[in-house]
Image (cartoon, rainbow, N blue to C red):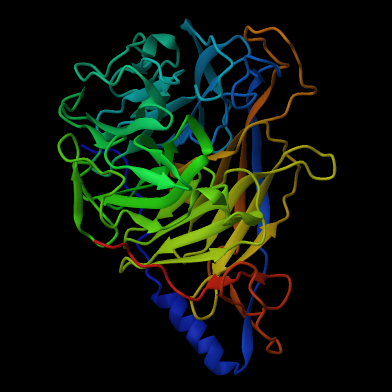
Length: 538
């Protein structure tokens, strides 16, 4: 019997907002939409681990200086039945798992002694997932194109947490397969996804960067075993990509997110092709697919079947796969964010330029319930973000800002509300009641947001000072705290205000034809492309 109820927060339609917005415009002819900034309440700021691992600057440090809080680390923090669970690597290079009773219980942290983190590679994150049917807690950790490291708890460990003794004996030994299901020998970027049928899904990339397959597996809570005959669903080596005279026969998907909304599983990604070598400059195009049968059959945005896991693979030339063409000159970042609704609406935020020129900004792409994609450019940017939404289709964007006035990298939050005619969103940065430095990237507890709309942010602070070395072997940096910061944003529902503002002339576009509408301060309405993007050619 499934123990937890599946969140219904994303079942709301646009109808209420549309009527309110239309009524407001009728009552206030010539009025323009304005948005008050939400008030942000700090609920709690708790230290999970006072001394979490950092890497010294030097030859061994790869792609960052922490393994805790990376954009691809989709589930280091999850909530289930009134408890919050967390995973990290501490300064003794031990993989850890912790829990606390919400809302403000003390963290109980298990440090596993049977596996030691060896590298200074920020790819090698730890993630957790919980199977609703049998209450097992799953962990995958410490891999970058290397064999799987996986462990699972005893059955029922999450169903009755008050009666469970929280120590290492609750978990089994490290395994390098999913029971009888053999993963690829080169695993990277694992992500657990709780399924609405009570099972647990696992996504990972096989092989390597610029030459890797998208893989999906399923843990069955009835049989307490991983389901055979799934695996590969996105292919690395079908199709040839040509750009600026260069040709690539291999690529990999860099996933924004893999997430359920209702019974539909959504996945969005960008391609990274391999010309002479793998590189971020080879990234292109926003791709999207969904499955209504838990990862067996895949559809493009127009609803056409485009793949069957383990049998017929999604690939570069799959019809209707690209929902927003973005070429390799744009500086497109990988592993950003998306948020989906039960009616098929999907919102993606990524960072790139418009072609070769211009400044990198966040770009908001969205899919209507009819499968039509549209786009707007935000007036700010930062690190790779995380996005969540409300029933009323307002949004919260959590990201790491770059060094501001010498204060280091910090946690930032922005909010968005639909405009009066629902052709775009009004975005505004939100003032936070405290300053939190961020060494890696902030990651969110999506479960807690869906249950209670509390924004639980997982982050590691910057250390007091960075250590530098010329030694080729992995050297530790100064440890720093791993924290969970909890915010509640008041006014994220019913937040539309109408104010009288004189109509302003349309602004000139910077890089492409846009339609701009002026709004009263302090809100900023973002320029939106006038030509909506198609769902994709079939």
